[in-house]
Amino acid sequence: MEEGYDSMTNVDPLQAVLETADHVAANLTRETSGENGNDCLAWHLPADELRDAVQPLIESLERLEADVLLNLVADGKGARVSKQQYCRPIHQLVTPSYKNQRDIVRYLAVADTPTYSVGIFVFPPGSKIPLHDHPDMVVVSRVLYGDFRVESYDLIDAPKKERSTQDTAVAQPTHPPSIFRASFQKLKSFMSFFSEVADEVNDRSLYARPNAQPLGVDGDNLSAPNVTCLYPHEGNFHSFVAGPDGAAALD
Image (cartoon, one colour):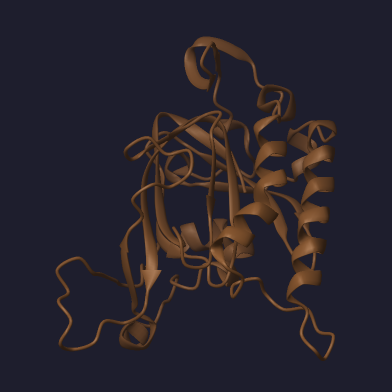
């Protein structure tokens, strides 16, 4: 099990974010409830409506004080927190420790509800989360410190045989090592491409094209304190590689 959220962080700065998440989730649930009264996912809403619904959460995350949340120690030569603020990374403080933990991305659980989950990813320098999708989901991420090199793709329908595939990338399932899977056991159900069965490749292939303008990303760089967001068909397939100082992100 990963180190618990409360034992490494200050819960107070997140209260406003969690309250906003509750409000956004409730609104989306009401807007997408089926005739039988069951809650439905928001994947079928128009993109503009989804953006408007999620905007309050993006703004709440932009106001979040990462240094207070993570009890960060100022370090002028450390990882970026904002334009004028740098900190000492915390990846070595997460427990339990592993023999090769400098390569392992850690996950600190914050909240888990029927409609959304919140957690903090802690990346050692150069560590990565390989290409994966978030089926039918909206994911909002705030970089707490550090920076990432990001690949982002939009999901598209499978091309017809006669259609040119010049601009179409076929995403293949990734096969993370067992220690990576153990570190992310809580998230396995969210990352549908973390398949261990090679025979499933043909059935689980996704078709994608580069996401030209992901929120908060400059070229392929996503750095603190920026917020980024993906939607069911926009930017839903992505990867992250932490920069030389490591990074942390709230999802």
